[in-house]
Every structure is written in structure tokens, then in C-alpha cells.
Image 1 (cartoon, helix red, strand yellow):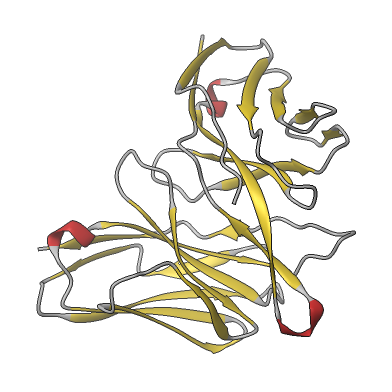
Image 2: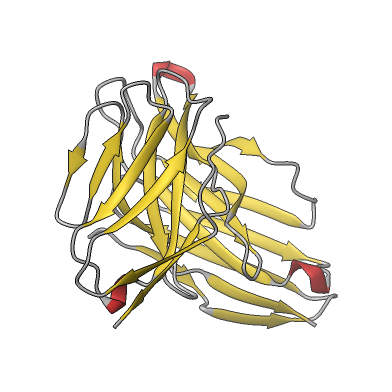
Length: 117
Length: 116
């Protein structure tokens, strides 16, 4: 399964964009990049995922390089409530019987994002 | 309903006790997962059930025994645990994925287990 590398911690001013990088140089062609975050003592919360195209939803944008070896999560206007641990995960498809698959999420160490006033 | 519900939220148990953690989802997901998270560490995968069958066991000690009685429920039976097993236990569920569709996993809020 592909591994990910993220900075241990980052700071961001409230209202500014937070750009969180992730390296996944051993990613395979059928593996997706997922981002989750975890606020203290809660379960991980899904943010966004992508394969090779850039993606945007109501929470964030995901920029994936053309070679797919790295990606950046962008929180466009960070708030204090965005302070959390952000995990970049390469989702490995595991085949089921019957031709279906499910995604195996293996968490890396994550980035502690602190948004300050 | 996009919730994964875990009970209890907190559990304190002695090393000779037997207890169970429960997880429930009603999203029609056929893959369910148990993760263990120690303080200040990322979640670690323990077990994966797919279509109610155990698909992955990440070399977890036998004092942890998972069970999937139906497509909505996932249990984790605990017996003869050690203090170092104290952790946040997280349950998750997801749809199957295809080449065209890759969906997210939903996590519960976890059970914080303390072994004394």
C-alpha cells in the first residue's frame, strides 16, 4: 500500500487559505487520494478525495499533480474551527468476491493544523 | 442518515472482564471497519468486514474478537485485555467501490476504552 508524507505541523491565520501538502510518490494507478481531518477526541471526518483531476467541494479543494506523486489540500478561508489533524491517505482497493472492491484506508502521521486569530 | 453510531462512548474494564463494543450504520454499506487509535497517534486498522465476512485481520491479538451479525451491525468482543490496550476504538463503514465510483468511509465518534 502506498505511503504518504506530510509536514508534522502548520499554522494559518484565520480567514487566510490553508495549503496542506502531501507526498505519495509510490501511488498506483487505481489508488485514490483521500483527505480526512480529526478534531480532538472525535472520529475522523471526510473532506474530499480524487484520482487525477482537481476536485472541489463545499469544504475544500484538492490539487493533484499531473504525475500524481503529490497533492495539496486547500481550505480557502480557514476558521478557528478548522484547527485539527489533517490526514492524507492513499486508498487501496481490496477485491471482494463477486468482482466488487472496498477501499482500505491506511492513515499516515498527519499534519496538525493550527488556525490562529 | 449518514451516521455511524458507536456504543458505549466510554468504557472502563478490568483485565479479567469481558465486554463488547457495538457499531451500527443504516446507510446500506457492506464494508465495515475497526480501527484502534492511541493518544497522539493516527488510527490503525484492525479488522475489515466485507459482506458480513471477515476480510482483513491486521495481526490483531485474539483477545479482540470481531463479529458482524448482519449488514448493519459490527461488534468487537473484548476479553483479558491489558492496560496497553487502552485507546479510542473507531468504527467505520463504506460502500463498495468500482472503477468509476470511489466513495468515502464514514467514521463513528469512537469508544474510549480504559483497561485497569
